[in-house]
Image 1 (cartoon, rainbow, N blue to C red):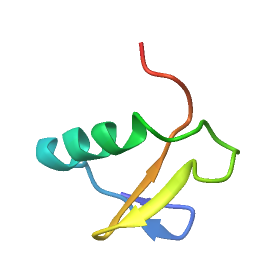
Image 2 (cartoon, rainbow, N blue to C red; image 1 turned 90 degrees about the horizontal axis):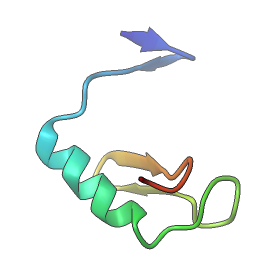
Image 3 (cartoon, rainbow, N blue to C red; image 1 turned 180 degrees about the vertical axis):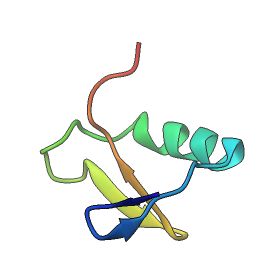
Image 4 (cartoon, rainbow, N blue to C red; image 1 turned 60 degrees about the vertical axis):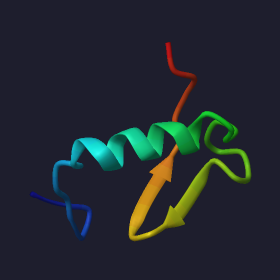
Amino acid sequence: MYAMGLDVFETPAELEEYACQQAEDMPVWPEEGSMIYENGLITVKMGESS
């Protein structure tokens, strides 16, 4: 899929789990630190998980 000028793909389960673990200690968007780029993965915390 192509969106907003970027190729977008479904995240493999192990990367999704990794991103969720990273997001636990992150503030919610748009606060500083709510978005990280690490190991080729962009993680943005859009809200608190339920």
